[in-house]
Image (cartoon, rainbow, N blue to C red):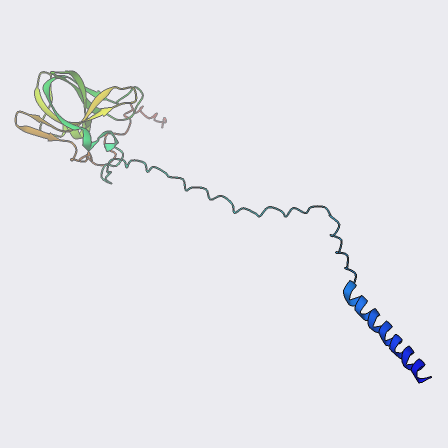
Length: 202
C-alpha cells in the first residue's frame, strides 16, 4: 500500500516537473508589434512672417547757393554776379535813357560800348544817380568799364557796370558784390505826365 502511494506521488511530481520544463523550453508567445498610427492629413506650418524691407534713404543733392545779397539796395543787384566781373575798354557809341523794356518802370541809363570784340550793352543805373556824378558820358568817349557779364534766358549777353573810368576820373555805381550805391528804390518809379486839375468856378 505504501509503495502504491509513493509511486503515485513520484509520478505526480514527475508530471509537474515535466510541465514546468516544457513551458521554459517553448517560452511565452511573442507579443505582436503595435500597428502604426493611421496616416492623417499632412499639416503644413504657415510661413514665418518676414520683416518689412527697409527702404534706402533718398539722397538729395543740395542746390547751389545764390550770389550773396546785401540789404542795401536789395532788388537791384540781382543782375550782378561777382564771379563774372571783367574789364572792358572801348568807345562810347550812344547813351540811352528810360525803362529797360517798353512799358517798364524806371528812368535808367545804359550805353552801347564798341569793343574789339564788337558792340555790347552796358547798364549803369538810375538817371537821377548817374546825372549827379562828376563823370559824364558822351559819344566817342574812350572809357574803361568794370562790369559783370550777364547772359539772359535767350542767350543775349549784357553787362552791369560797377564803375566806369574816363580820363582818370571814376564813376562808381556798385560795390564788389554788386550792391548799388544809390538809395533803395531810386529810379524805379514810372514817370507820368500829371494832368492839370480842373478848378471849380467861383
